[in-house]
Length: 500
Image (cartoon, rainbow, N blue to C red; front, side, top):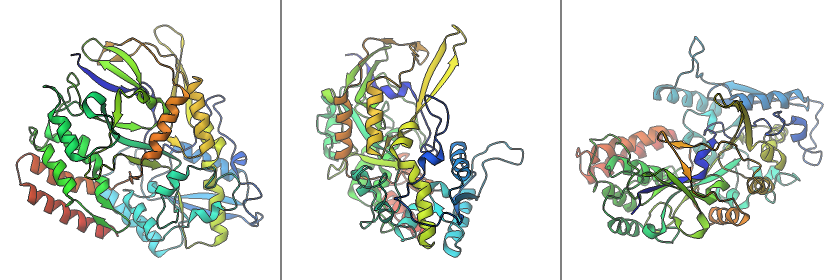
């Protein structure tokens, strides 16, 4: 049997990062920013007096990323009666201008400062996950009624409303029927495996997961590993947000599902509490898959013995998106990014002005034009021009923009001219290369629509560390399962109550 591992075709392109992925980028054709005037709201949307300037302040953990700053400058330059100002609470640069990371203590301090501003002053008008050191704070404020219901602002908007945006995503982001923020882009997080090993059901229970593992051929792996810590990271840690309820400010790590999956991880040898190396030469039962582009409709199957690569259509059934195992088989998550919320304690005039700013990120034109960015640079060996595309992470929430992007992929408008691909230093031989079809895009859309769980992907890193510390202690033999579950539940409960 050939030893193979599955790679997503999109892995051969460059994907943008997480925090700043829903900001304007240059046009793939002209390299110019779309005009803020072209994005501004029509007369039908607002009747406010535009002769009187309104200043709106947006909270940011650090200075805004370059593309967002460029968009704000353009918006302000249009002299449309609204000006956006930024209030930063931290800096990623030291005194010499050299970038650095934040310590946990620094992130906590930033969160404290932003929280105090929101609770005790009216100086902040716009807030997003990027406003906090850890985005869990944003979710808590959202559920405490701190923001405007955007459904009200959409009612008279001819371009950005419940008909033009993905209704399924909007409904998953609701809280008690209200919508406090809108992701600009979304994607699915799931597990995927060969159907011969995982079956053809898109979702599975924990018992089905463990039964399938027992039937795997000798030498198989879970996402390239047989190490307890790695399997925890890839299967259970990735599913951590499902045990956190920000709406009720509760955690549920004492859920039988968490215990059962943790006990499964413990059936593998420990690496003394450390993440071990991966080995993709064995048959992998499942791996974590991010369905964040229509390119996910085509699967690249790499033989790591020969470095021969072949393609398959996800809809053909050779592979199955099985989701994360749970007792109810609820499966995968949808995640999103790009949220900006409007404070509820500001005047209606300010709320409308704030909507005029943020709505521009959700129009068909903006989301289509800013999905792909083309870079051209000379090949130092041949001298030919290399064409390479980078993409937004995820699908645009504007329905028309999403259809436009699917068509662009089908028509190969985003095609790069990079043909020589190496993996682990070995040149890859492409045995066949399939062309994306509309049916592949439809399959992805149907899969997205079938997922009814929304993961708040900005889960606080402090919570991850609490869980991880106790889990790694358990996997390395430092404590039993009962003590582990009890410690995680108690510590996480205290932490979440402190955030609220």
